[in-house]
Length: 57
Image (tube, rainbow, N blue to C red; front, side, top):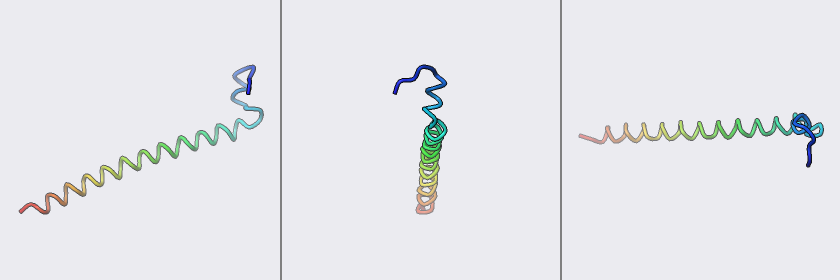
């Protein structure tokens, strides 16, 4: 596509709300997935540390 101005680019021929809303939701869910992975990793490390401490006599 070819846009003559920035406002035409953001409007996307009438589909701007759908396009930018979809992009926003995608970015949101990717960031949530990354956050969840960090939390799961931190919890796994804490669990491993706890189990390792419990095994020591």
